Image (cartoon, rainbow, N blue to C red; front, side):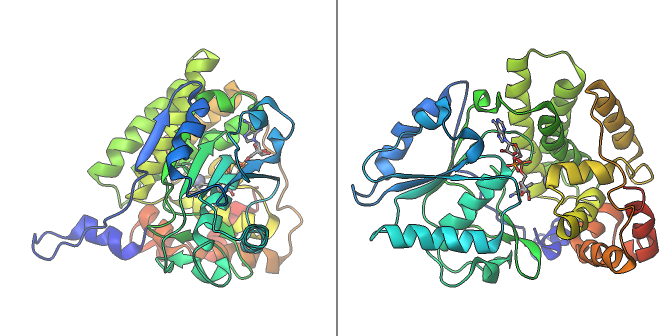
Length: 375
Ligand code: NAD
Ligand code: ZN
């Protein structure tokens, strides 16, 4: 969300002058063990005709698995398996759109993304670009999308990012890593089936789960906090604590982390993230470090900004015996540090949320370098 919107939410006292952000939510959601089996019925009324397919963008970790066989394809529907090994790129979105347009005479009835944040973001971006001209990089920013996206559905298979509820799709473009933030980005339908997250490795479960935890800490400790964000953030934090600290059964744990992700995403929709995300964007831009682990790598060193949050993070990390990589920035040259620092410092709203309007008095290039050097 834009800075302007936030300060309006927080500071306006006059009823007359108040202009609040009016943001979209996912209008349809189904939750529950095995709910993926309903996908065929959910899509049926959205099918335009037999020549207008559904295109399923699916994490290639599922290629040849039972889940792939359960995807409800009919007519000329297409499944495209995609690697989530790298974060989504504008060029990748553009070539997927071209591929679908070349293959079919008609616009698809819809796009379904089955995977984590990477695949869900791709699905959102492809759905937007099926109806908008040019390269997806043109629309990176806030409210630049001109025409509504086609119908699109998100099916998360790992929990934490909140990409299933957010109005953004984060893309690495030729010049910047930035979301397509728009009212057309949000999914029309989400299917939350916790069973789909069963095969996630412990490390990835932790990294993506901590993305949610860090969303909560940054939102709840931010200057943009308001009752809307707080209500979702507190619930998400409570669920994260249960998942990562209590002895839940695997099934309960999957259910609760899926809902934590949802609430965490809702919390930042009406506030903003903070220091860990601002710095993690720099790491990701320069070194290609993925979002979840990047946040963890930064967050462990943010005791001065989030003392309680970092203390609890360390307890959770130890409990689950997660070894974070070390020495990532050990051999970087000055110009590389400068790239990370300038990417990070360009995230004004994140810094302002974290530290207030005078954040530049606290956050200097030297300060950021000293934190990056620890990673
Ligand atoms: P991911 O989609 O990158 O997947 C991480 C790994 O987990 C991949 O190797 C993937 O194959 C694997 N995986 C996923 N589901 C699995 C399953 N059920 N079984 C086994 N392996 C599985 O992970 P993520 O952390 O969910 O997403 C990160 C991406 O999300 C980044 O690109 C980030 O920019 C984006 N993001 C978007 C938003 C948003 O609001 N749009 C918010 C936060 C992050
Ligand atoms: Zn995040």
